[in-house]
Image (cartoon, rainbow, N blue to C red; front, side):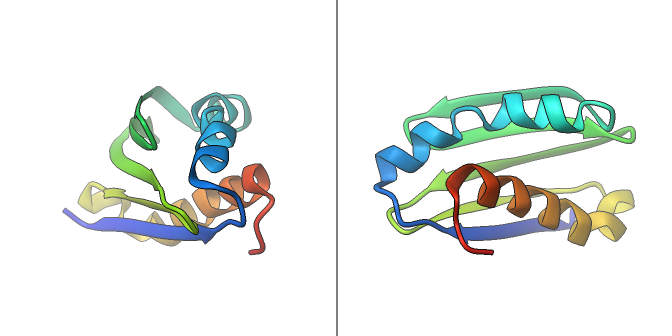
Length: 103
């Protein structure tokens, strides 16, 4: 399966960044609900495991909050590989908006 990944630096503590990102799932649901269905997420300390369906394609991944950056990676169905850049850009934009990080 093809994958996707992106990372965003932040100037916060790991805990502060994780607290800000606790709203990530709700923000995606609110802002992209017309494209995304079955959005699920489970936080385990500073790691979010998530899954959703976009345009009928199942996508899953993890968001890991580190001391200096947030890393997001996951798998895509082969049919979604053409949209990898757009998926990465959308996730990165949301992270930058929440964290107030430089793009």
